[in-house]
Amino acid sequence: MNDLPITKDEILKELDSIQAEDLKYSDGRILGSMCTEAHPFAKEVYMRFLDSNLGDPGLFKGTKSIEDETVKIIGRLLHLDNAYGNIVTGGTEANIMAMRAARNHARKYKGIKNGEIIIPKSAHFSFKKAADMMNLKIVEVDIDKNYKIDIASLREKITDNTVAIVAIAGTTELGLIDPIEEISEIACENNIYFHVDAAFGGFSIPFLRNAGYEFPEFDFTLKGVSSITVDPHKMGLAPIPAGGIIFRKKEYLEVMAVDSPYLTVKTQSTVVGTRGGASSAATYALLKYFGKKGYSELALNLMDNTHFLKESLEEIGYELVVEPELNIIAFNHPTKSADELSKELEEINGWKVSVAQCPKAIRIVLMNHVTKTHLKELMKDLKELF
Ligand SMILES: *Cc1c(COP(=O)(O)O)cnc(C)c1O
Image 1 (cartoon, helix red, strand yellow):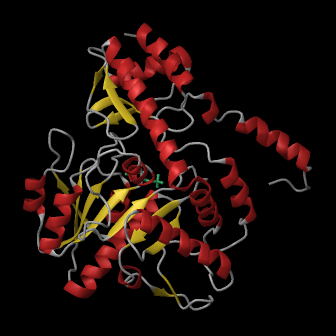
Image 2 (cartoon, rainbow, N blue to C red):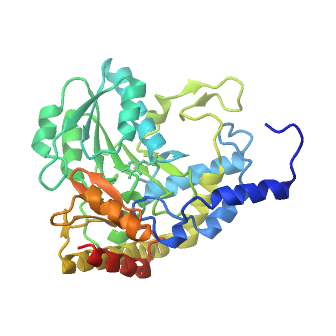
C-alpha cells in the first residue's frame, strides 16, 4: 500500500488502463455469458441506493419496503398472490437459501437428519456448493434423451431422507425446461419440498407466454412448487448482483431465522448479513419501467435472434443438439470437436463462445448485447470454418 495519497486523476488513469483488458459486452464477442450490460436507468437507480443496507432493515425502512414489493411483483408474475423471499446476489445465493429452507423444514417437521436432495445432471453447480455447505447428499436423477428429468427415475430416487427435489426452468447449458407439472405432482404425493430453478428462464418464460408462446406450467400455479429462483441480472437487465428467491410460504423463511441481537430487527433469514438495497431498487425500477409489455418485447427479440442463428447454422450444415426452447443454442460441427471449434472461433475473430459439457457442444447464449449484425459476422466466420 502507498504511504502517501495518490490523486484521483492518477488512480482513474490506472484503473482505466486496467479495465481496458476486460471484454466489453458492446463488442458483441461475449457469446457464452448469461449476463449482459445492465440497463442505463437501472444503473442510475442503483447509484442512488448504494448506501442502503438491507442487513439492518429497521434503519432503511423505505428500501426494505422496495425489496418486499419487488418480491411480491415477481411472485405475482409467477402466479403467487402473496410471495415471501429476498432479492439476493444471484442464482447461487437464491438456490442456497432454497436448499437451506428445505433442509431446515424437513429437520423441524419430519426429523430428517441426513438430508438428500434430488437434482438432475443438468442442474447448476450452485447446488453442489449448497450440498457441501449443509452436509446434504446429492442424489442425481437421470435425464432422458431430450436432456430433461426422467420421471420414472425421479420416482425411484425418492427415499425417507429426501428433503428437496430440484427441477430447472431454463437449464444453464441448453436452456431447457424440465417436466415441472409432473414433478410437482410427485412432490405433492410424497410431501416433499420442490424447488424450481428459473434463474435463467424466470425473466423470459412468463413474458414469452404472455406473447403467445406455449410452455407447460412451471410456476406457483402448480401447488407442489415451494420456491422459485429468478435472476434479475440475466434477462431482467438489472445490474450485478441481483438474484431473487421467492417462497410460497413465510414458514420457509422462519425455519432459517437466526437471532440478530445488535440489529434493528430480531431475526435474519438471509445467508448474507450486510447486503445492498441497490439491487432491489434497480430491479423494482426496471419492472415498472418495462412492464409486461416491455419485457415481452425484449424476450421476443432474443427468441427472434435465436431462430435466426438456428436457421443460419442449419443452412451451412452445423448440427443442433436440441431444438432451442429459450435463447440458448448448442451445436456441433460434423467432424471437429467443440473444443477445437471454440478455439478456432477465438483465433479467427475473438469470439468467446462457451462449451457445454452434457452433451459436448458449442453453446451460445443470445443475450441482449448480441445483435443481428454480430450474428451475421459470426456466421461469416462459421461458414469459413465449416
Ligand atoms: C445462472 C444460473 C444460476 C447461478 O446464478 P448466479 O447468478 O451466477 O449465481 C443458477 N441456476 C441456473 C439455472 C442458472 O442459469
